Amino acid sequence: MQEETMNNGAFWFAEPRLARVLKELDFENQTIKCHARRAIASTAIGSPSLNNAEYTQLHQLLNNYK
Image 1 (cartoon, rainbow, N blue to C red):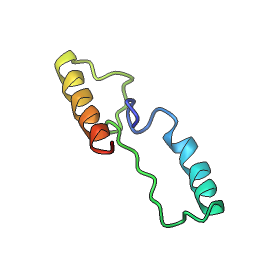
Image 2 (image 1 turned 60 degrees about the vertical axis):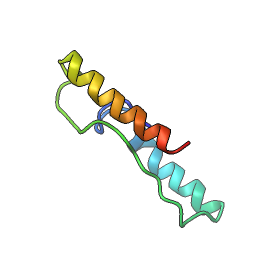
Image 3 (image 1 turned 30 degrees about the horizontal axis):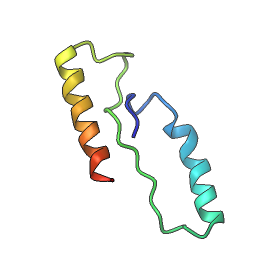
Image 4 (image 1 turned 180 degrees about the vertical axis):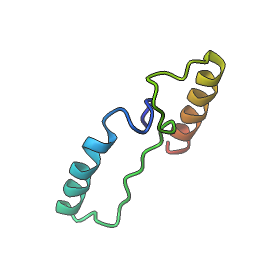
């Protein structure tokens, strides 16, 4: 799970490296997914209520994977 927006954070750096490791370990049929806020130009949402709503949604997605 990535709390930052899709265009921030480590996903785009890590994804090709993780894919290579999965391939080397014969897990090529596994999918790497990123659950993140939509990409935006600003560095912050700017609205505490919107931020809390998005955080809650991301947290619920993470709990679905447990």
